[in-house]
Length: 234
Image 1 (cartoon, rainbow, N blue to C red):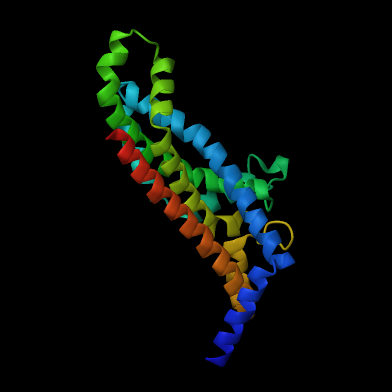
Image 2 (tube, rainbow, N blue to C red):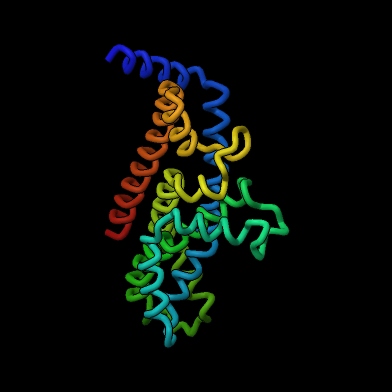
């Protein structure tokens, strides 16, 4: 019990004094996750808008696949990306394995289905309200998509934050493709796993405090945005 309290006190001290290692790992985690979030949102949001406004033969199949991929095991994604980026893989020539870029690629693959599925649900509901108006105005497909994306921007930000929440807490895939290399690819989740295994509970707890803080901030943001979205509709 004494060791636990000592570890908590030391971890709290590392956080409030902005320990160099703690700060470096946190900033790298944010860099990787925010980069993945921007790329994933740029892919997922237009895809969700397209699925909302356009009817085509494979549409329901695409939606079903996106919903199914929301539960895709991250370690499987990590394994696939590892094989693709390894020296014997098709993209091995680029030397991306065990780099932050490889971690970003893995996170993008993981969160694109999540963001697209949540965004599609919101855009589909909005499309039922806007359908007759936009059809009567004879606007183009792209204009319909832009209108939906703009008017549903709060709900779409919520979808993106949900993707951020999943990505920042991911460990399996980025451990495989990043290698958890010190001062190169070590992020919050992989560092927590490593430091716990080494018995360095103070740093592990400090990293855990930061991760919990980020998760709470994201969840509070989602709650606030969801509430303001509902109030805006009323």
